[in-house]
Length: 54
Image 1 (spheres, rainbow, N blue to C red):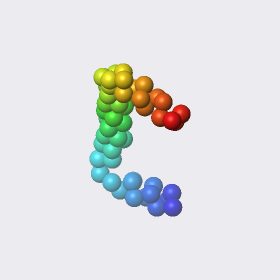
Image 2: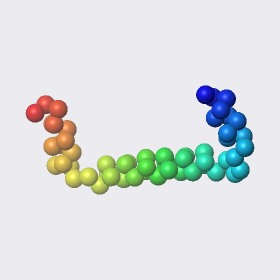
Image 3: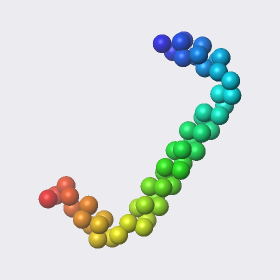
């Protein structure tokens, strides 16, 4: 299985674009989640925090 993937990726053109793109998507998602947590209402945080205990 790995040999098939390795042979396939060796023939691809401009393959160096995909790791950079995936890293940018990950960083953008992570920053988005951090921003969402920072601007979230504190009452909503307390409500979500107590959900497993209810």
